[in-house]
Image (cartoon, rainbow, N blue to C red; front, side, top):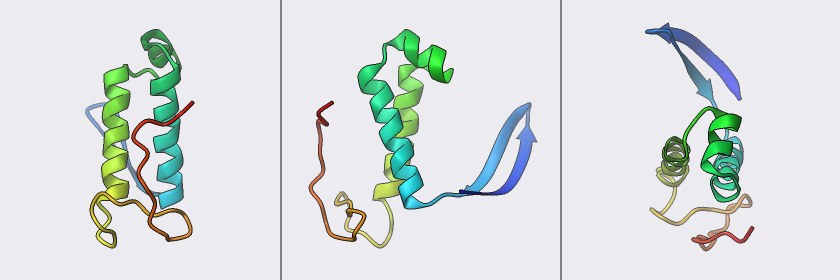
Length: 92
């Protein structure tokens, strides 16, 4: 992960970063874990965001990962480049 630029708009810090696919996948997984395992109160106390906000962030990351122009829509690659089945209900 590399910081390209940081700006502040209306007292909100905005970051322009370069992030690898693996880094985004880890973030998506961490958000999924929080959504599956934490209560609403735990989500807010640990992240400062509601479950709905975390779900929105996770969906944004998912779109970034799965709308890559080099892939067939809706069919994510495994880390070794092979096509994989999408898990719709992860077991935890």
